[in-house]
Length: 178
Image 1 (cartoon, rainbow, N blue to C red):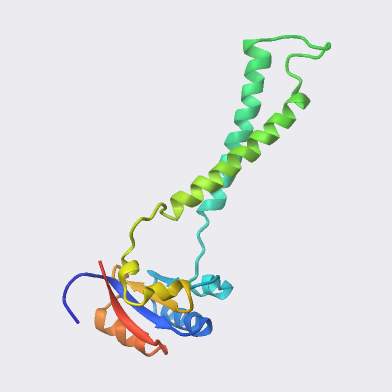
Image 2: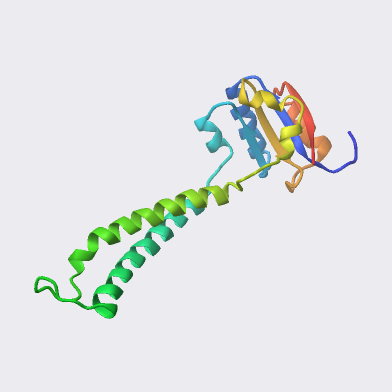
């Protein structure tokens, strides 16, 4: 193998069960910076990768709170401070009237936080990724399954990681160039 810098090593598998088992064994071996590519979603794969990112739900919660406070605050400012007007004998601060707008602003801001948070946390738009140039990677959208262990992983050793991937019933193991 060449001594040039690489992105990582990619193992190709023929079926999803082999990929899930290989992912479990790689994670159990101590690898943490790895990713899997499949032509369709595999539920067990997220569990095997130990994917537990909790940032998006917190972003959606924060967006909902900001939206609710914004809607309520805007109505309070308009009806009580900026343009106080008694309508139908109601007081300036008639909070039950604020509920529909507050609810709608909560939903709007939470939805926008979900969309833009997902885009940002997924690193999109991603116009280039090193795995796109790996030989045979075009089959990832058809009928093959790939596991990539990144070279930035603390446990990564080009030779030892390659041997470990070959021992996991991989059809082929290739280097992914930067």
